[in-house]
Length: 279
Image (cartoon, rainbow, N blue to C red):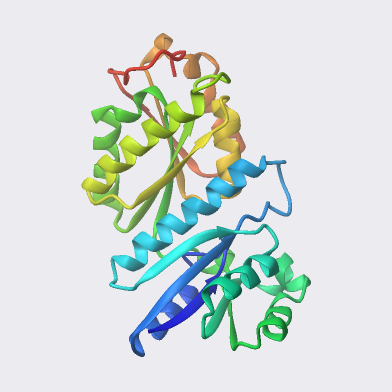
């Protein structure tokens, strides 16, 4: 079976890239290997490497889900922050027959300023197709919602809100961010367990979703995610009223002031079991 290597980061999900993959898949027995370099944003906030790597894994997971739903065989991995090294590592390991590299248009692409396409072709000796995705003018073929929640993540109120949203707005991707509830030991594993349980429920409902854990400060977790992902709207779920430390800290208003995307607030009456401060 022919294997094609796909290299992309923020342009994943662009219609032109999806069409290029679909065209190859339709031509015969073909499988695809996706590499998402763990590249930091070229501008904006300073974001920790761990968050950048987790956001790249979210892209891998969502791409696999989207294409597998169309019957296209795709596996993937997070690669080196340098897209050239990430590509050549995958070439050495996978030995593909062809490479597809997706970038922003030249004026917005750091990859093209480093002559990435030519360097990959010269170093690999393989045919390289360059797919330009202009998200600023084209957008994505689906809506993307960022969901920020901690204690209320397992609440039925939030899940029902997501169900209704997906049914009302059509093809939809949900990116769930779970802030760690404290800075101590075990916080990351607790957040990952909460995230995994929520994603399992969402997948069982047919909701296309992936997620990552975030900074213990929910505002920092939110703005980091907004820097890393292109989203149409944001849902923040909290406990009601004064039970919520997030509301007491004016989190909703602060996130609204940090983004042009719509920010919805969903209150959940029943928290999930936790020993952390009220979210």
